[in-house]
Structure formats: C-alpha cells, structure tokens
Image (cartoon, rainbow, N blue to C red; front, top):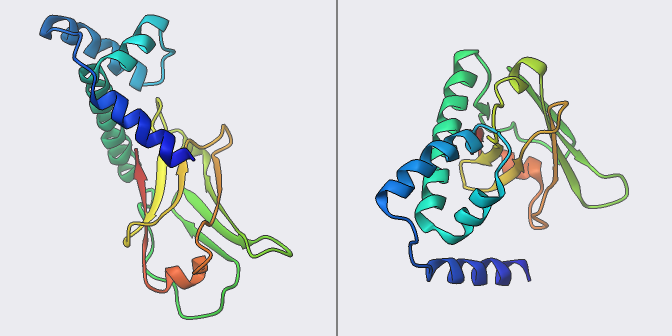
Length: 181
C-alpha cells in the first residue's frame, strides 16, 4: 500500500504549478539552508515546501550540500566509508564488522529467519552528523542495508529485507559503503 501512496503523492506533486517568482525563491533558499542544518521549521515554510516544486528543489540542494560536507568531514577525520571489501566465503553466521568510527553488527534473531542490522557510530563519528543529514549503508549492487538518522547514542537499526539471500551470502559478492544523504 505504501508504494501506491508514494506514487499518488508523486503524481499530485508533479502537477503543481510554481507559485514562487525568482525573487521569492531566492528569499527562501537562505531559510532552507538553515532548515537543512537542523533548525526547526516555521509553519509557513512547511506549507510552502508542499506547494512549491522550486522550494523542494532548493531544500534538496541544501541537504545535498550538507551531505557532501559530512562526507568530507567524515573522511577528513579518518572514519571509514568503505566498510567491507567482500566477506570471506563461509556460513551464514552472525558478523561484527569494525571500522574506523563505527561498528556494524549482523545478527540472526533467535528462533526466526530474520536478521537484525545494527550500525553504531562512536562519539567522534556521531559528532560529524550535523543538521538533518542521514546515513545509508548500501552495497555496490545497489541494495540498501540500512538508512536513517542515528539515535542520540549513535545507533541505527533495521531488518534484512531479503528472504532469498542472507546478509553473509550478499557480502560474498558485494562490498558495503556508507553514504550521507
């Protein structure tokens, strides 16, 4: 059902006419840069971003700039971006992968076929997470393993969503990369 709602929302937003002229758009771009850095939204701007395709694009540009800055800062402090250069052949056991600034745990949930994916950022790495920048762990085959904003302790959890393949099997053919979004 969610995909149907997403498609409907995308179709509705695609039909919008732009209410902002160039001067009005320039005025909101500075405010959207502030929102992208994590400041609370003003209600008028929340309404504006729903009504204006140009405002949404301006906000996405601000978020992308913050994500690039986070990536640069992350690398500059020596934190890992590429986490795994393919796992060694082996069974479908639990795994703990440690890299500079983070720990990735892949654990089978006892008594079930589900796998829990947990990413934990250390304090120094978490300090690089400014504004509303989120993280995504993705493999070189395009599969997103986990995505979102870490909690205040640096943790982010998710479930493996592929019943046809275990995480360990996937790691035999793909490497993982941390992205900022």
